Length: 311
Ligand SMILES: NC(=O)c1ccc[n+]([C@@H]2O[C@H](COP(=O)([O-])OP(=O)(O)OC[C@H]3O[C@@H](n4cnc5c(N)ncnc54)[C@H](O)[C@@H]3O)[C@@H](O)[C@H]2O)c1
Image 1 (cartoon, rainbow, N blue to C red):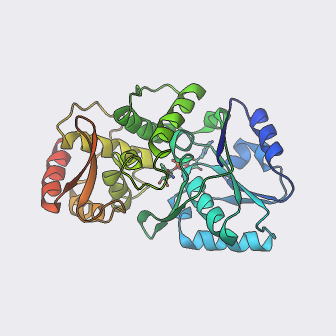
Image 2: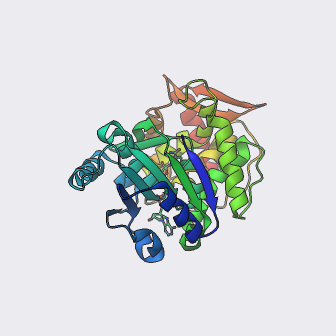
């Protein structure tokens, strides 16, 4: 069962964490946080990892599993992951398969992970550059959300989180703005829960609406790369394209990044591999209400060409 706790300061978060673990624990932490948040590096058994899409692959998971084995991590141990969405996704996946599942506590440290990726139990790694193709539904025992982590987060990463928040402003009654607070984070967590609580395994077309903007976003990350597009920046573009598809009023996006004309054909191919597609390319659209709509390849190519020329 995933219990979610919210904190304004590290001291309170760390105290809670202490109450949830014993000595049979391993910390897996984003290496960038070592100088920035030393309080979380006290434990002897700590593995640091470099956070990026590159972590979300088989080789990294295999190496980490071997390290866990060497450190005698077993089924009665707890894995504590501390980092953004790439850490939560990959370490959550590792926790779900290592010895058929070990207790896992997640501490999300980016805005994106605190408002979105840390909730709902989707863990994943990429298969080569196909995003999140291998994964599991596995909830942490507890999630500790600590606002103080965001004090060191670069602006680019804040903006990336805002991409997912922008999605929520379209698919729910949330008002989008630049502001960040703990109450805002709590509100977004609740909004996400309202989509996945009744459809945890993504089966009855409720949770699928969380995919708004992600068909194009995942293709952009695959084709143009995660160096050009943070996940949230790609989501901004993806949401904007979904609104374009239904001729809806679109806002000025806070990102200036554009899709390269030369990428169009590759993007169309990549969108065909989105794991939520059945046969054609599926998009979540906002009509009278949220709907799932399928498009023929030819049709979507024409829309994308038009969009790219006007973006
Ligand atoms: N599972 C889900 O439901 C879900 C939902 C949305 C996104 N995701 C996934 O989340 C991933 C993106 O997550 P992300 O945006 O958090 O990226 P990330 O984990 O790669 O972190 C982004 C950058 O911020 C740095 N960082 C992390 N915390 C920091 C801090 N407190 N201070 C300073 N720097 C810090 C990291 O080192 C990294 O350089 C993608 O792989 C995406 O697919 C998953």
